Image (cartoon, rainbow, N blue to C red; front, top):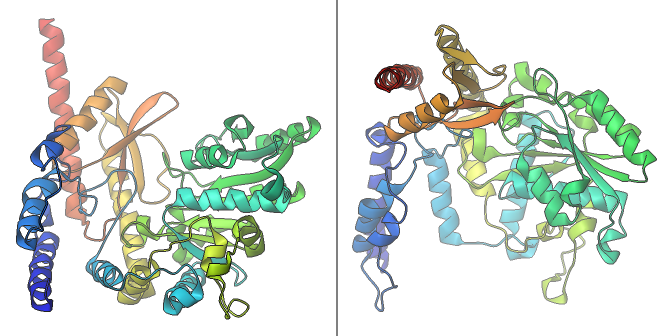
Amino acid sequence: MTPEEFRRGAQEHADWIASYFSQVRDHPVASAAEPGSVRAALAPAAPEDGEPIEAIFADFQAKIFPALTLWNHPRFFGYFPSSSPPPAVLAEFLAAAVNVNGMVWKSSPAATELEQTVLGWLRQWLALPESFFGILYDTASTGVLHALAAARQRVAPECRTEGMRADLTVYTSEQAHSSVEKAAITLGFGQNNVRKIPVDAEFRMRTDLLDQTIAADLRNGKRPCAVVATVGTTSLTAIDPLREIAAIANRHGVWLHVDAAYGGSAAILPEMRHILDGIEQAHSLVLNPHKWLYVPSDCSVLYTRDPEALRGAFSLIPEYLRTSEDDRVVNLMDYGFQLGRRFRSLKLWYVLRSFGRRGIMERLREAMRLAQVIKQLVEAEPEFELCAPVTLSLVCFRHRGGNAFNEQLLAEINATGKAFLSHTIVGGKYMLRFAVGNFQTTEQDVRETWDLIRKTARLLARSEAAAALHG
């Protein structure tokens, strides 16, 4: 492309994106595509000769976009909040253009120093100790793997050279994200050495059972390595009691990692800072700006107060990556298994500067307020019931018609394309998850989605009653 062709193509793409943002509610949230339909619509082999960008863009609009589930939609309420506001889109545009690799300081000084700076800002907003070292990865799954690797380095440094020990154990809530178990599998702890601690009536890790389990493992010759607590569990957003867990972990000399991938963002609000009470005693913390800080995927932060353990687990410097500045700078490749590093800090910097702390707080408060609106709507309907406390911006509820009814209800809601929700099963109960957090979501979106849920449930109930009558 010539510079002029690029300008013309960029303008056409920008116009489409601007129209998407302004007309987003005209598009279905979830695609009605059938498995294999996209592949069938695409060429079976790459072209021999280049094609004009106009043709490629036309195919995106005609063949790709209609088959997307639109996470960046104000009525996408599934999984956890996800947003990509215009400032972040512009940052990604620039990051792709300069295409830097921040593996070492010298490979792109601004990429390293911007990352350190913007994570310092976020650390201040969260009122974390200044000693917490921050680094960006792609997802929280990568973050927890690095945290467990640092924990292993601290507890059993011989594993780096001699291989994994069979006696190291990891402790987490039975409601913790599956990434904890996956990290244990990947690092060689093994699933049998992951202890899933039962929860209380509010789905928080039971500290008495944590203490008892660690003590029992010690008596049986095991070597406790790490405890993973959660601030905002995936299914129900329960908040584990960090201070109590920290006291137990410290007493036994165990690394404490806190998974605050979703919930941690709320701690920017002074009235919500209590959810991180005791965090100064944790060894590491993960938080995902791409969940509830209005930054597009992927962008996950790991903070640790023991960066030398993290560096000790991963640093390996071949001659071709040594530079004369090494003793004066931070080389981020030393703090992870990845060498190549995308310029993720740019979009975080753009978002924090564009919204400011007040703007972020306003959006967090609004998301939590809308969750309370949903809670009240659920409680006002005798046919529905809440399934868990509404601690942040997620509401878990179900129809009283039973598991099969709720599963069908979710399928029919999502099939309309007017909204998208997800589900979980806890204690044998199938429940719907209504997560608020997109930067464009309004109370009207929430109320109209609730009307859709209620009307769909009533139609489904009538249909089942009619089928039973004729059966």
